[in-house]
Length: 265
Image: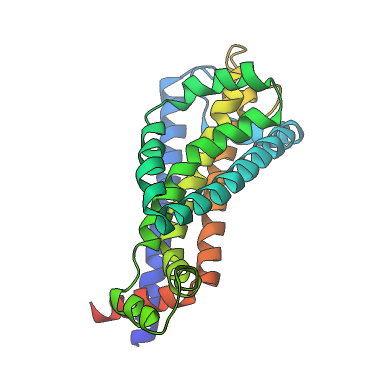
């Protein structure tokens, strides 16, 4: 009886978000038709759906370009963030000199840097990758630093007693301990990576969903703009879910710890 009750509870929790989305879409559809809002001002969800199917071939091409920008920029951010976080943790002098610069760099608006990248590098894929990497780099680095510092003091003392050096301590304890923190940063980073790709395409591009939105807006093809927004939302959600699945695969012990805490509560 308890088993079925738990499963029913989980099923209900999973159904809440889809139900809310359906209610909002139906309300949107109803209000657009009742108020007789013109399509160029606010298209109904049904019109957006039609556009998704009618322009599927064109949308798929622009989606692929944006997806490549997101994945490559995110990959650069992960590699750079993990490397810098590791160096910061292992070296106090590096932490004092570089960490404040990393924090200060986040006060510079990406929308200001993006046009300068076009001037310095020109059009193409590289400026968009750099924008994505810059916007998603910070959460990866900060969370990784916190994770590498979250080592158990007792475990650290045992390792030093056994003669382990800093590198051995890093490989055996610090890095595995930091993985849950890293994945928390990756989930934030992958979400903002999609935003970074769109910003890069807004500033200067010849393809991509951001470019399509900018091109469609002056032509009053608002349903196409919303279609691009829908695709971007699905892209972000799917990549977020992928990161979550990867976390469950690589950190099974963390999942067991979380579940045991829930049972204790």
